[in-house]
Image (cartoon, rainbow, N blue to C red; front, top):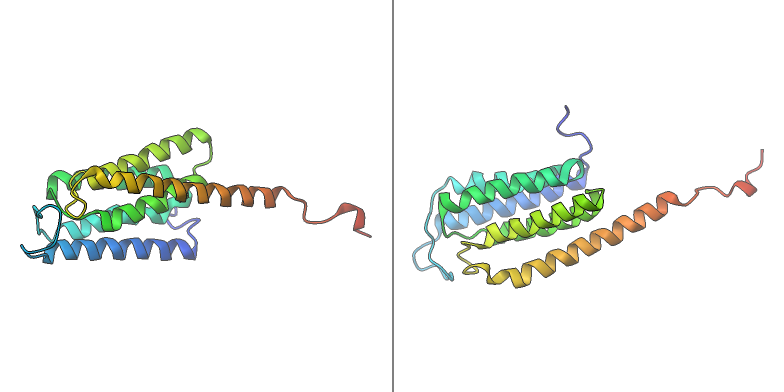
Length: 179
């Protein structure tokens, strides 16, 4: 099994941006002082959150091959980070990650049942992200994040429908082809 099969250059760019955001947020949590302007005080300054956050962001790289698996891996890692680190800032990388994954569900999930599973996974990912998020103070940010994810999903559906329509159109007019 080739783990880089079907990965396109822009997939690497997207993954690099998400990993950079995750690393930045992790480093900011580690270096935050007691006087940090947050809704809730940080419970942890452990440097271990940096690789954990990076590991949570990295599955976006495989969005074309298995978006449901990517959502599941990110969800499990973020869920494990809640008891491990407590109140820390996660929203700065995990919400943009959920938006990108919502778009990918619309583009690459296939059957409608997979879309439903993916969207439930996106909401679960956002819930786990925000349940102990120091910057937002908790779940109130879901009123912002869920509609934004819905917009990204809608954009993905629009693009996917356009792509499917273009593929279905004939490329040559048979009546005009001469031998």
